[in-house]
Image 1 (cartoon, rainbow, N blue to C red):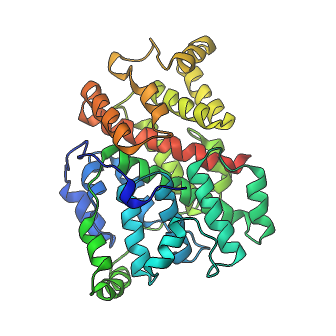
Image 2 (cartoon, rainbow, N blue to C red; image 1 turned 120 degrees about the vertical axis):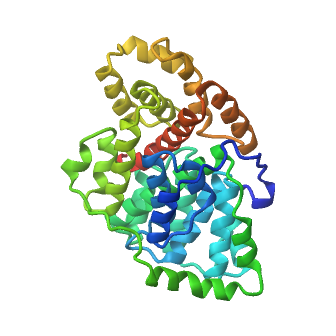
Image 3 (cartoon, rainbow, N blue to C red; image 1 turned 180 degrees about the vertical axis):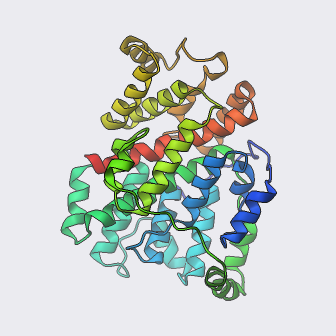
Length: 361
């Protein structure tokens, strides 16, 4: 059974808030609230934009209530106290009762949902959990129930991006948005429920991202994984995150590629492991170097401060929150604040990318 909110152990924040006034002004201009996560990732341009997209992306072909349920079970499966509490509160604002939310949490067969909706929730839970990742059979089952390939692509992206954000929040040990949670359970929650959509309508909203074609998406790191999202804004968002993460120089490109390879190996994804291998070969690694790094989770070709990244990256796939937070804190002592933030973003993105690669199965 999935973990419940009250069962999640959570440590003090791993990194302090480091507000960026210009970024906070930009979030407000877009009509988005400034969250605890935003205050901790603001120093990284690619990471802060990806985090923004994770909390504001809405699949074009799914109703908001279904998307929110998927987000909640994703956070639940990833034991993210921060996201789980926020999504649970958001469902209350959408009008769902405590008893209904508890049924979703406990994975009960609900009469309120039809067969298509129950299959959607089950798929979200399975992809977030990835023990193992959903494969062709699960995708075929959704197609048989009437979901289109584009809808499945959007669902897989939304859950994968949710897994990214869950890990960023967990690895940072972001303090919960308790004020929001309290307001969503309080006697005046209906005011907040009315105010949120009104703010979105009055504000300029998030900037539109043009959908890219398959050839454009396929260019760049892990393009093979992003290409199936051709024609969807999801593809543009994912490509921007991947390109940005590999362009940043706070960690070596080889260290990042090895982190992706370790996550891919742990989750059993040959597509992402092959893509990571290609990057490493371009960087001058031999196949023997790669095999040794994968077997030992160490590489003499990495800088001394990067030595602990591979074992830690493996531990970000399946974890108990307080334990991985402790390990992340220890890694920060080796890397320093800026490089640790980069490592958190890269490991989180690797977990998302490997989950998204189920579309290639």
